[in-house]
Image (cartoon, rainbow, N blue to C red; front, side, top):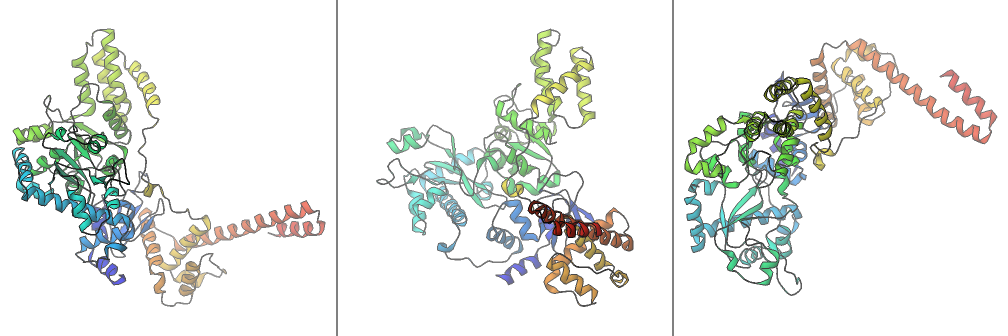
Length: 583
């Protein structure tokens, strides 16, 4: 396993892998970026291709390419290993089914289910009818294969029996969201969740299937039976996998595995609601598109999106007031500094309808999309009479929240001026209302961070930071060690070992290579800020450490003094006071 890990590292360029998640800027031999693990305005996240490491000098996180993928994807090491092995073209020996983790077994079940549904679409009578429907919607054969579309047969346990034959338990199939337990768990066997539906596999960032959306193609209401009517909703056009260990609808953007490169390249993402919107748009060449899977834009989806761009175009069917939940997502996006445009869709049509009828028109609608405030400006002014007091109030009620959320003050001032002109009121009045609105709507608009991003490295003490800086300077300016006459002792094992090697002019210890690489990267980070005066910096570190050591000693004696005073030990009190005086 160790040799395979090293082979993967050797084959991959860490900067290339990380650039698939965040934007990197070349700086000398390294790259830098805004850290994806904490909020910052000035980039302190560095990647060193030569050392194959990354480190943020703001939050303290760092490591190799495996650590980065684990943190970004919220995965365990084994999952990161598979992701990177695939990128590197290294085949990982698969462990037996019985020894795989629960999460991995669910992923395996989803993959097998996808193959089962694909085969049903291509080879069964009802599956072929479903395929005809897809082709009639202008989805090409190539797209059917690319997006791995399939068909779930209208049988109670067709998929479940197939998965059981492959070595999986029915309880695991339930946990994967592909089967449903009946009301009487003891007497009845779990049955398939998806029956008589076209299947849309849902992928994670690496292209692994983690869930499904199933679209009905026939009148399933004619199916009778207590189990069906009490647990499934046949009238629903779409049903989805419930939340599992690997799938959460509110955290997924459908199609992001295919779109992410194009989104980063164009620095823009088109957001739509349906699977077919994404498939048809991508089929026609507009590939920087993802879907919210029929739900409103969530904070978690915005978190994923922010890795690639801060600009998006909303291809939803929006009315003048905005659907309440959708509006909430837009509110959060505005507060987080996203630049939002809106496509003006023809009434009653979704992007898939437009693309099916005229692909060129969809592209034109995207190109003519409006800034969100301008879009609502036009809607509000058309919807109400700006000459009446009631109309002015309604227009301002709609537009003030949008204006209040604009982060750029110049842009905000522009729209305030425009609104004042349209309503024929003083700008000062609009400013006052904007301030009131801003105060009212700030609560609850933050994007909650995912658990893996909430974790923080334990902050280093000031003493540790000073010691590391001193070692960095001695490492880059070894001649300064000979000049130094002070007796130095480092508080952590790695530091003491490195210092002794440097002082003795010995070869640097191999087991400290990662620590040394980090110090060297930190030196390059510091050099960007300006020239370093090694003699002056070293003396500052030593003086600070000596003061720190003295202060620590005084604090300890004061604690002893308190105990001696409580005990009334006058002799000890006298000795401790003398020590404090000497220090």
